[in-house]
Length: 359
Image (cartoon, rainbow, N blue to C red; front, top):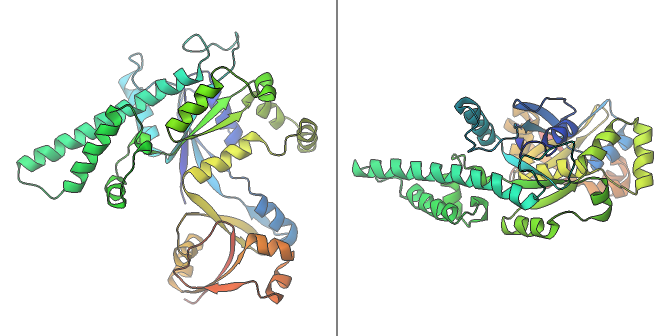
């Protein structure tokens, strides 16, 4: 399942470094770059210990590093601006990186540190883009109406609703839409409808103290815009990456860090897009399969192979927690914890599934 998340932000905020941490891919930050981020999953690690498979496959999300520029800046060439907008439109979610620390060696484009100002700068540009898009679509509908075409009443009303929200300088993600309205919007690439996560890049002192300029205001901004904040020390995460695996574990233990910030962020990105994982486990492979929340068993089977979906009979299912309590497949089956589900069963996050099929 191809899903992607774009990393946006002003220049010199740590955006490209975060991209490298998530993907393991080095880039200059001056061009649009794509890499894959593995979604950490302790459940797979535990199943790997039990099954000792030939390979373990984690869920992946494509991460797109989008050069740090403002959408409306007049200094950018039209071609570059168009490429920037196209990249933002193509992704399914966004991580907006803002910087909370001062560093004389790393200049800030606005000359000072203010996370709220930086959030407003990019957010305003996204809203203006969406406002223009809504107005353009309204003009097309109105032109069609003058020619007697009146079969797009739902889109017309929802576009007016979108324009109203945007004119109040609010992202569309804060609006309330009916199921019918959402259906009419699903093929329109509004930027402020995309799931958004704010990544605040802290320095060592701020990470320890939990304090940085306008922290309260930043959290208030996130609440008002219906998004979540992740505080991360990109510099420290980069330094951890440079250590040997054994030294990494020791360092994290000494620092009292149970889980790295970059791992938490990767999972948050995954969840923000409404994604969950069902698991398959055996001697050949332990694997996480990506599906949307609300996916039925038959459709989930198709993620493995179309033949399994076509010949679906039943799904043999056990919840991950119940499986781990038993410690093995043999004991779980002896206790009768596996259950048979039909094609309409809604798969839950962490379900361990074996599909029965006949082709």
